[in-house]
Length: 299
View 1 (cartoon, rainbow, N blue to C red):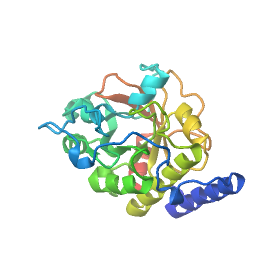
View 2 (cartoon, rainbow, N blue to C red):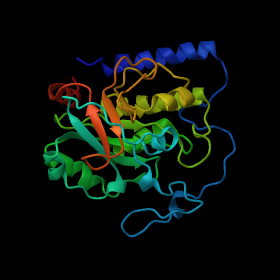
View 3 (tube, helix red, strand yellow):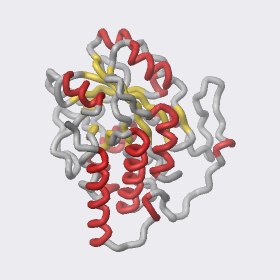
View 4 (cartoon, rainbow, N blue to C red):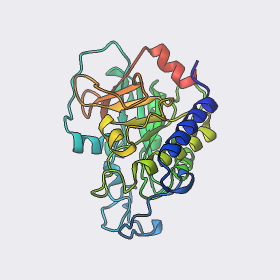
């Protein structure tokens, strides 16, 4: 049985108190604020240009310019390289993850090629929704895949709790139907500027993630999956071990996974390549189909 959500959140809070005692520097209150460092002004949400099919057009003042191109691992591939990992063939469930970048997906063909699960990008920040989400998310379920939604974090724009609420409202809700994975939080390099950590300190980033996790758990009864790379996690959270009760979806484009972020003894999902036999990125689940189904039911 999975660790109860309330106990896991209490463990996260405990780690937070310890970190506060060791480093009593002033940070954003309650983990739901962004850095006070000055940034370039951005256009209001209503001013964001878009095209008829829902895809955004690039604009220098648009805080969500090219959001369709920001899929899980897009920035990890940019900064860490090694796009085409070829791990040994594993007798583990194979899956993929897709976003608006892939457009409509033929899920029955995906299933025929061996996919057993998929993650679909639902949202980014509080101003972007994948225009193909319904076809991708519902289509995967109709084809018999276990699927979940993920949120591309934008700590530079709003608080973690605010973004968790937006995610849950627009695709990130969990249902105990045996085919819905807990929502995933995509934490990776900033695609909108030179600061890889979105202008936040490590402590502020930990607070931001903590707020997202807390609100998501309160709204759904499940801890979110955390997607990241070990390198980004070390750089932007100080290799925090406070979130190890959440399942880990680790990006590592190689024949092996390598070191995991602090606190996690094993991964749950491994994104090993940005291309392959399936649309989008290629992933393995760490265990059997039975265990994957248990993850989808909360056990």
